[in-house]
Image 1 (tube, rainbow over the protein chains, first blue to last red):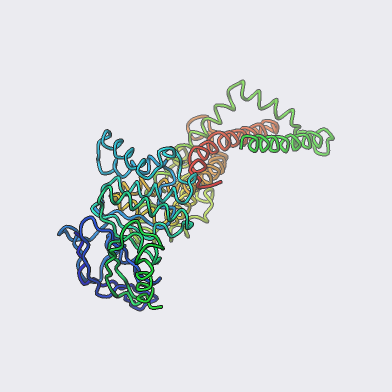
Image 2 (image 1 turned 90 degrees about the vertical axis):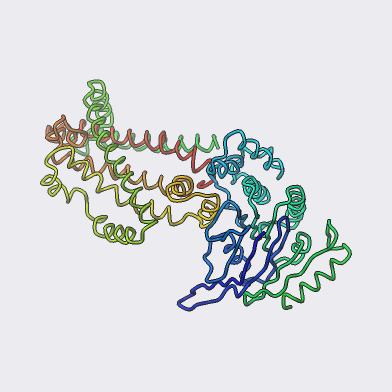
Length: 245
Length: 261
């Protein structure tokens, strides 16, 4: 369980203090798929980076399974939007294996984990490819495999499909949902795309432009969800209006 | 790809051949005194003689030994200093000012000082080499480290890399294009430094001296073909190192990884 308790984050921009996150509180239960939705500049990425331990909080508390978060750790693995998150000097297989090696997982277990997660994202035939030889979608699949292989307590995803074409994005959303229902991983997923938030999440945390928590909206639509599904349009309208349009 | 590199090879070879033909023609026409402008044929003969007698090989090997020693020491120092500069702001500032002070100073200008400090010998030459190559290496390494995408470092920290492991596992490979260009510049600078330093006190350095001293001596003996043969040796070593060593390192690293084209 992730507990985010009254956190604030301010940056100093051009000499003046700017509040990015204002007094944000929420809880994420184990196995939940939660999306953070907000307009650009609302601090979505900053919030995720704080939970990842990449940014220090100005004040407030964050607890993962009762343990305070203060630095990056393998219990919270981040999948980024940028394609260059893979190490270009390693093959897909080596990219997935490397974090396991660093964390002293023995060779037998390593190979088993690498094989399992590479096939889970459908890259068996590309495991010896270097990142620059892959399409954008394949790179994000590889990054997801690398993140999953460490079996983190929570997977942090920062608009991982934001740079993909619509078709690839749809198929990756479906595969992510399948992986999630197989593994029961907890996922916190940042997006600015209302449709994506509806398709993926159990709950949607909405941030406002000023970096405040606007609302937490449960999403109980039946899966699989498509824009034509019952209740989809209503939820879409609700979120759209909440975003301040 | 194979065709492209093949045609590149032919273009380069053709260019060199034309250059040699032009040289030979000018020499044969005796525009200049043959003893100051030797023909390509006489240079090649002198070169082959030097190689078969072992003299030219010995001189080249000695100079290469000095260069290698200087390069390895400089690489270690440059890598250490640039890494420290990434961690400690004060090291970066000190390197910055040292670079401003020392980089523009020609190595040969420091030779009198080097002789006083290290005596006439290998120590002084190594000092000059290190001075000549350390600064361009540091500049390149620092640029390499500073242009590593933030996301690589984030991922590195996320998967549990810290300190030396982050340096070795992420920063080194991620900045390899810059490290390689730093080493290439250093290699060329080291040649200039060693030849210049050897010309000043070559043979006195205990052993029989390197190529720089050989160039000086052949000119002193008015053996211009011999002088050019020594230059030819430098050129050949340069081409071999560039085409066989550097090109292959690039082919199996930065090109294979799609970091450079």
